[in-house]
Image (cartoon, rainbow, N blue to C red; front, side):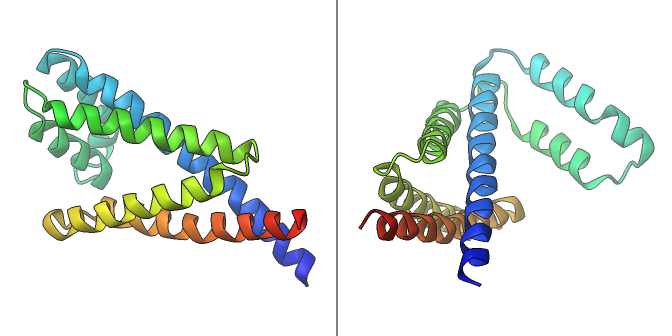
Length: 159
């Protein structure tokens, strides 16, 4: 039974950390995208991304969310948004890579960093009530548990 639990933790860890890496990667891409000048680039990208879905289903939840998000992005993108996405993405992707490479130092650093992100995301959720932010926070909380269990397993194995 213990072997099955350990295998489940290992697989969940791998998938969760890979998802965290992808999240970080897309934040970096998003930050770079937002840093590009011109509203036209943003509008064209959103139209190209949502055109098919909107033509099939004008009430498509994700496509309409992207359109609404695009409408909220002004021509003069806030420097903080670009900085935040790039920094947050680099930290997430970097920690995920270190965790996937089984760097022992990365576990406590990832745990503390993800906990800080969770606190900030809860703070932001209080003001935005964003479902996406809530889901991201729940994912991060789940990942903290999985990373902790994996770290505990590695520490016990090395002791």
